[in-house]
Length: 229
Length: 222
Image 1 (cartoon, each protein chain N blue to C red):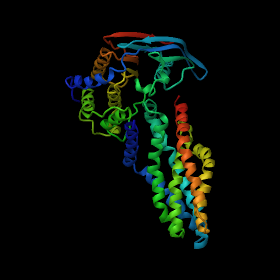
Image 2 (cartoon, rainbow over the protein chains, first blue to last red):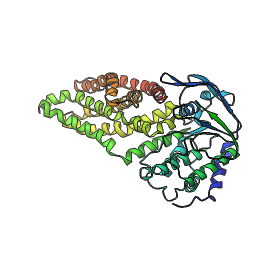
Image 3 (tube, rainbow over the protein chains, first blue to last red):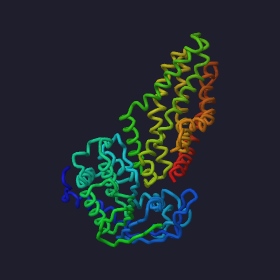
Image 4 (tube, rainbow over the protein chains, first blue to last red):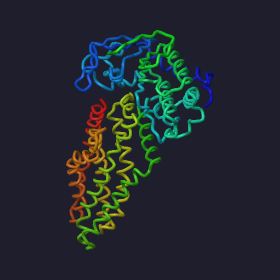
């Protein structure tokens, strides 16, 4: 496995940085959220506010509704009560849908097994309406330790490598808010380090991040904690 | 605005090319079902000819049905459908693009191979032309309506059978009009009325069904 090349990294980020700036001046806020699964109430009266440059770490035991919360925040599920705001607008009525302001990575990697890592990311960029920027994609894959694996169909990659491809796709999306559900699962120490620096860089350019994790990883920046259950 | 739709279309077509057996099984099914009829009901050319429109249309309908389950289920299983909901484009347009790709992969080959089977069932050239035209207008309707069923049965066990139960009754109008068009030519009258109604139905399906399908996808992923 080639070592992460830190030198490639800043370039690709600066491209992203330029595109990000338009959206990055709005905060993100949840008001009086409640969710239930089946008959069971997961949480209620949940409120928080996130300003540009802040990270929110959601913690709690298994089954306390972390994933449900993230799905609600990303607009994939409807809350039982309450509303999520992007700036002053409810996020569901934002122009272009929630996808124009946030990127979401759930438990599933959302990769096409028959396509290569590079194709998967380029298509995701095309779907998001972003320019392909092949060099940035290759640089990002390289920095996550996937240099040499770009041309392999994803089904030949290991679980951890697939996760890295999915992370590369998310980090290349020029969105102000990134929502990551258990991003550290199946990753090795080196990659966690790369991801940590990517997260810090995203915060430094006034992006926002919401993350769930069981692993404590120290992140420099304005971090907040939300404990469920 | 069109870049996301083109990216989606290219993705679906590339995936279909990398796994051609999916599309080939549909055409194969169509050919085999039609080929079985003469074996079952005897080789009388006139009798076969009078049955041909119905046989071809029912076979095409079942072949499309067979392919519907895969329309969304692959994307649903690997999580890409979830990501499609986050694409900053109207979900209805994305769904319409997926249906178009589905039609190119399954519907269009049926139209193209139908003359061969029509000859086998003793149809005349002018009747074959009408049959192809009717299938060309009709198979998109089958994909469009079928997509609703495919979306509503996402993630359910035994989804395939449920799609058939949900959708086959809705296939009755295109079946009647499509087979009727060929029948009309066969009996010496014009197929225009049937084809016009079929065309109207396609336009209606084109505008109405993608939104219904998009709503169904949202509900099933909630």
